[in-house]
Image (cartoon, rainbow, N blue to C red; front, side, top):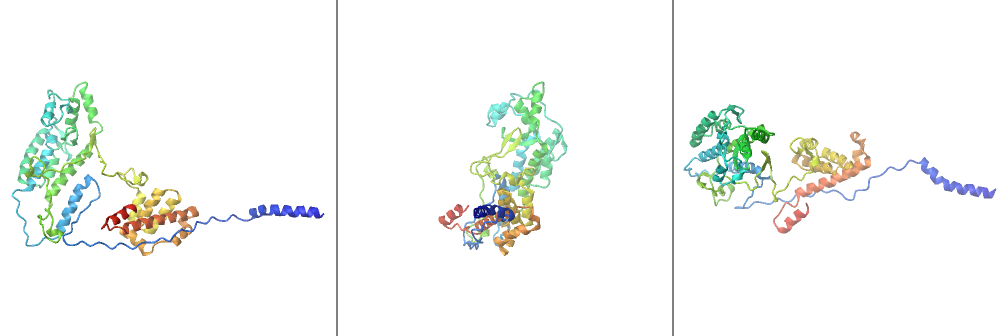
Length: 436
């Protein structure tokens, strides 16, 4: 009997831990304790600009931003008043005359549409094999076409209009010059990298194929023209003309001055003089011109430039590579806590790219950063997220961990932007570079 009781007692102690585990609910997982306290560092003391200091204006972008940089520079000098006693010397000639004539000459080949033979290209210093035309026998100029302004323009009206615009350019009067010019430029005008000039797709394909009619050359000519977006070409031409006319229609910047203690009394303008006729001004050449394949423009990015570094998942592929709608909306809303919640959700779903993007938006922009700085979020903010009704379906553990990743990113970005901006010494510059 005693032996049986002992066996039962031993079995009870062997079985009891397993029965106890069935009766007790499993413990809820707890987020790990944060490893640090997030800190918003004080902003660096801003450097002062001493008298006669050099000021460099940087405009972020590539060569396509050159016009914007020029506009910003002009605006900067216009808002800085010049001394009333300084009177700029009058210009001996009207600079608008040269600019308008250069613009008219640029589009002359499109307006008058001349087929260029191999000898014509050689005369322009280009290889003869860029044109398949040995002569222009049997080729007729186009008559009625659609021009950039959307009007029907005949060859006679284009020739007459060109003559009238030459007289207008020589008078230096830019009024209605753009609209008059757009009325005589065929819609298929484009900047041809192959033939080094502006000419129409009609002329281009005729030169490429060696003709534009017949059993063999006719189909090849039509195939060359296929797929061209005429509206896009016309828009490019209109923007180019508008930029040039706008630059001469606006008030000019003050004349150069040197020796003063302020920008308004100490600035110079650099002129481009490396061309055959520098008195009329020289256009700036492009070191990396766009590539044209089949009449379509493709930007060439040289080694010293950087392509966009944003992950493709953050871009709206249907809208010219802009940021996704939800990111644009977060930036517009400028609510740092809302952006942090969206970042936490993204991190909890293992979407680090969107998590980083939303966390960045929580501290960039003066409105977002103002709300962030007023009450910098800490661990209590992360612990409060699971109790929010809108977040009940998100895994609580992953949500809190994702929130901590969001705060790590937000504080790192905020401190990077607010500190280490002084580059007075090589050591300070190196410290900033190493923090990237």
